[in-house]
Image (cartoon, rainbow, N blue to C red; front, side):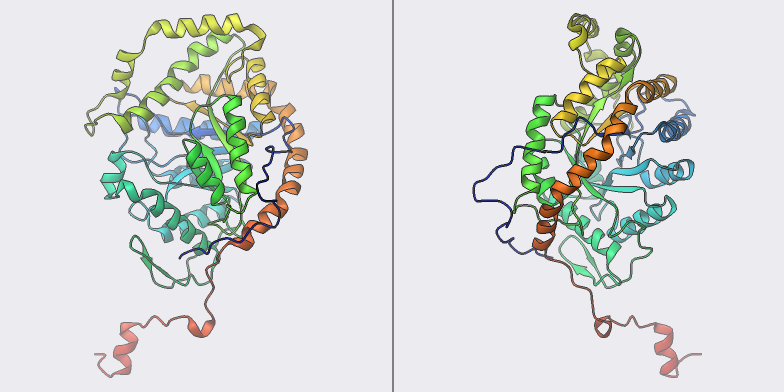
Length: 442
């Protein structure tokens, strides 16, 4: 359904520019992130162990007070991601947790991957059984292994994903859903049930890898899941771009509300000794970045390409030693979530100060071990998390208050799919009933 050209925004003088978020009080939320990476060689029980250890970690994170657990959806990506059914994993996580929010980070929403009605049904069901703890990140896939495996034209994937996401939101709200027709997706009028516990629907996000997709997120009223690695100076620029658009007439939400949030991912490994933290977690984080790039830029042989082996051949062992030396030389100015609690505190403060709303830890990557992951989560929760938790409620209150008029204006610019009047809802004829009325029923 086309959206009308938005009128001039009543809240921004022509040519005016904001100075970025005004509510940045040095606080933020924290999440953990799962690709379910499994480098080769594999043994028979590796996937069983991987998934069950991840569930143990989510359960631990819930007890420790982390805010989010994010789960991707990928297909056919050997070693990089064995998370092809995130709805199953998140449902299991829902049963084992009470407070942590459960995020599709992301759900592949293009109809070739998942029919929009099935996505809406799955989201609503998960939202009900988790008592309203679901977040809905949308994505499209970036690799030929995925896109071509489902017959998706790469040049149309962004348009197809945004179109599908808008209709998924409509399905979760409208009773009945009036139906829709386009070149990539068509569906007749149906009542898509159940409806989610969160109203109007779970918060919507989109995966972002550069400044252009940050702009796409803001223009569509979506939270930005920034799957890229940037420093606080870059983060400041991203936050200003994102929130300037959220506050401008460019923001026309595809959902039924605006989810104004910027989340960044980062490597994660905690230890009281900085060198140990780097040696424990840096290799896995490097593999995450290497594999993500290689799957897009290098030829792949399904089931036979060995990403971990290629990564090890290319990795220079001296780089880690140099990194450790540089980190130690930096002393109390070193900031990273691969380090000590003090190092993490400095890093988090830097990002929070420039307007980042959530930091998501990539702790399960490469060959990082379960015991190290759990130990790191525990250390962060003991030594860093409490001071940020104490400040978060006030920051969120200030943010909500500041953004309220901009979000109201954005929602006024949206062209809403109109519900059908009762008399306009089409009757779905049953063939048996037709046969009965014609006297042809045997």
